[in-house]
Length: 223
Length: 223
DNA sequence: TTTTTTCTACTGGTTTACCAGTATATTGAT
DNA sequence: ATCAATATACTGGTAAACCAGTAGAAAAAA
Image (cartoon, rainbow over the protein chains, first blue to last red):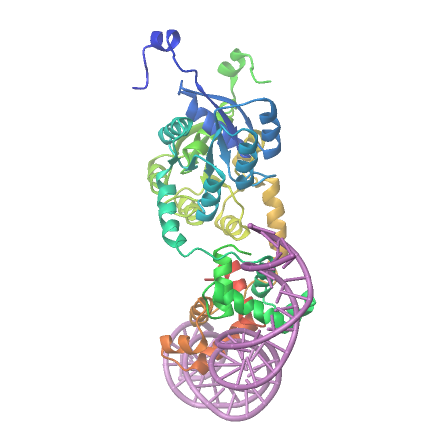
């Protein structure tokens, strides 16, 4: 299964290898990925970058089949990167990579168009499968990721109502422990207005006091 | 610089290489570390493990000079691992490794006896230096880690006053958005008592309302 | 055992949050 | 230009949080 007759490979390889670009700011991970993929003749790691800017510049001129994209880049966040890459090169398949697994981020990345998502504890096999699947325009999500997505989908039914800019702002100030009066002073509006916003927030988020409001805001990373 | 005359190496290597054990649950990182260290003749990667249990079993019989220890293992947490390893083999030098950098964890690990700490975005050079430094019984901390430690020392002066069990419990209930009366019912105590606890909490933590209390609790992971 | 800490509980008072309903000016979208 | 959404602001009332001081009982530490 692993070692095909070399004659076959060298003489009649119908498909050229899948060209892969690695984007990760951790040299260790880059080396690790390269090593894990070095045995695999169907994949060729084209090059790598450690930040978003260089990656986008490269993609101005060059193209690859699949990008292994770390979510935590120093300059541009992963979610944004997905959008920027696909705006430039819509046919590229992006495979998200991260150490931890936050449902909200994974969801955002899927919305933006990643074809797959792996945690960095993925095995060599998973990695190879993922690359070939996304290259064939299928989705691929690691087993842990699938579990996480399943959980978050369950909650997604009563998703957060979107808050207005003003509401988000006030929510953040509330979470900082500021009272209605203080907030009103800072925003140069009436305390009564602040209270109205607070009430609307609690109604929208279906909670009954400031404590729950803050907890929910922290949990959902609205602030 | 890379290729020394092979005669020199094979005939007169005064010091045997530093034996290194890698412990990390991410295959990618393991491969990456091995690759980064493969050029370095002064270091020999003995073997690797992906969890704490196997590592400790190995150390029952074998010994190495330096352990590269990931903080986030699936079974035993890094802080505990350091203690367990050093109880068994006090002469081993442990170099902590993690992707992110939480001051409290780094501090705990130092207290438990790690000789160095690197983030996973360390370069090949940093890694080599770190290994040789800790092998010589010096401390080595990556530049980012040093910055983090400096910051945390500054804050450490007014560290959190330790809360009693009851206080911690009530703090958690407050953070869940429960009112004084509800908490009192749940704990079969008077609402007045709950309020006293709340007041003590606020005093201890130097905040002036429940909102700040919750935010602080979430931030400091007291709950 | 004695001392200290923790948990318990109260009085009495101020401030703030919370609830319900209403209303107007200003944006933003179609 | 018109309609919907947003941000603004009010009245009036109830409930809960917050503040200060006190104090007894239980548990833990000395």
